Amino acid sequence: MPDGLISIDDPRAEDIGKLLEQHLAFARSTTPPGEVYALDVDALTDPAVTFFSYRMERKPLGVAALKRLDDEHAEIKSMHTAEQARGQGVGRALVDHLVAVARERGYRRVSLETGAGPPFAPAHRLYERANFKPCGAFGDYRPSPNSRYFTLSLDGAGA
Image 1 (cartoon, rainbow, N blue to C red):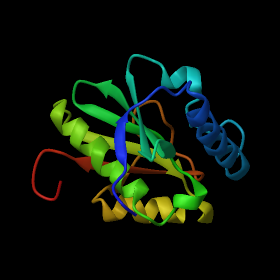
Image 2: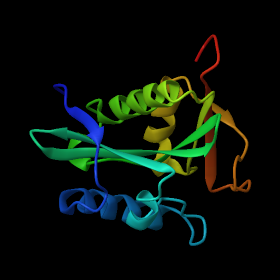
Image 3: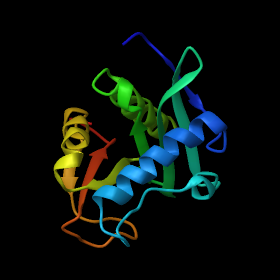
């Protein structure tokens, strides 16, 4: 896929809202109630969250957010690629961008939670290829068979 533009965006924008609705619908259709941790639009406007979009010719093809957990730890949230753009590098471009932003901000670690079932296998491969390692629950999460957790150290070798 040709290079798109990744930039800070407004999760309340109409075209972004459609992607976020798809993201939440997918999360709710594949994860038991009470274990869906995808952020809604209001949560994505929290000051601790920076929301990004990947656009090509002004059309949003992907979204992701970086949430500050503390001075050294950030979390990737609400990562979603439009169905027609999957497998074309949008997700990887967003992950790489979020990791670069985390480094610039001085974080030492970036983590994420995602679903555990077969529908999430492409996400697992994406994070593993970006050098994220499986880890235990972090932050406010609790261990669950419906979640997988990944982390990336920004401190040294292999990061």
